[in-house]
Image 1: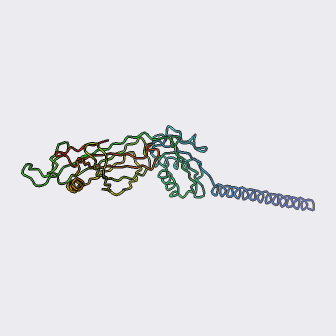
Image 2: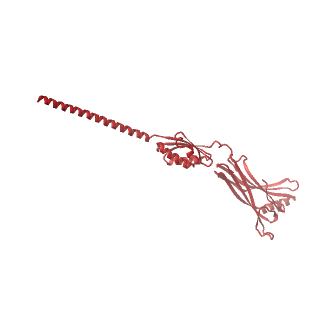
Image 3: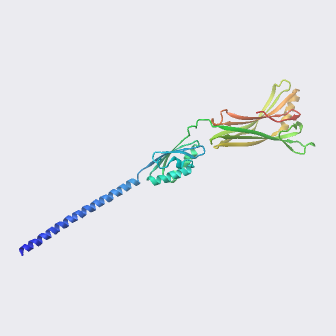
Length: 318
């Protein structure tokens, strides 16, 4: 009986020990699991607050299309042939989508972008606006292409046209006669002079220019051709034109009071009893501020209108 009691106590003791050991093992497992969970949460949190910087350099051609993309982080993800020829807007969208798919971009991430182009600020502003709208911090720079200091190939075109408007007379039914004719000087009342200027460049470029129209009544000795009198006037005050395109143009129409100049020349001849020639010279002057556009500082077109001849032929001198 005593022996049986000892066995029961022993079994109970062993059971208690096993229970204690089991509790310790369970507690250790729970601690390990909690530690692992905490580590995972900490790691996730670190990823979310990671300040990632995407560095891009985009080169655009003269039409504003992507020529080349250079990026340390995404060069192998966005191949040049995938993005080449895209507009800047489409290229930015593709860069953003690809970056979101492959990187942890958040509102703490930043974009460091450089635009190589001849379009100056407009493309840079477009890139900044796009990424800032996505909530990203943007550091941006703009560089002109390698040929930015080279003169741009361009052509200039100037034209002059006119109509001669007559005094009332019994010879002509028309009140105004078109250009390229000879005219009886005594019948001329006014001349409607039209000046046209156009510039065409190979590349879109920003430039300003000023233009104006001057007149000069030049009276000279008929035999020797010596200039005796000159009266200068500005028929059109200076106008400023700004352009950021390949083509720029303007057209100006000036009404010339032919009768006024004829009377002025006639009065001079009577006062000094001289045999004279009188011509009215009209000059359109265009001055560019961009050295890449014009190597000569200005462009001119000159028109000569005879005043004292009995018949008048209007001629362009250059």
